[in-house]
Image (cartoon, rainbow, N blue to C red):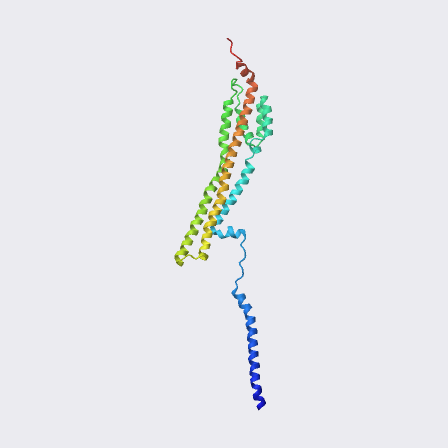
Length: 270
């Protein structure tokens, strides 16, 4: 009995140590798990598409359509508004050779085979030459026909170029609409929460700023392209009309060149 009584405190101490060791092990194993639960995983960085387009909300969709339309119109105008489409140098040289020989019918046949602006214009204008008009050969009627052709044919080109101006005006309005919607949402958050909470305001403010940025990104190039292609179109049409007048004057000079030179006085006799 005495031996058992002496062993009891030792057994109690061992049990206490064993329970403490077990509790320590359990605490050590639980700490990393709780730390992993409390620590939030780092947010993945946003891509450029999500940062500048998707975060702008639904208003970025019409702005994207406007940007695609701008690119399409640019490609169309670059393919259409070229010198070879309006005044091909080889066509002008071939027709000039014929007109200097006053071979108007042959020049009409050459012009009719060209789909260029100059070819179509001279195909319509050159038949107005009148050999019975000995003084002028009907040059005035030819020039009037060229002017009428240019006035009608330039309208489709002006329509396509004018779409750049439309996009330059519509895009900022769409961006402004998204800005207003975003600011309305931000003020709605302020009124509901009673204070400025950056986490809740960030989404609406992001929509407001991104739509404004998107509208300007589309509008500025569209405005620049509008004036660029407008001036290019005017220059190409003017060059074609002037080339037509040169061809007309070449035929007239071939017939009346010497007579006109004879009428120019060299000096005055005293």
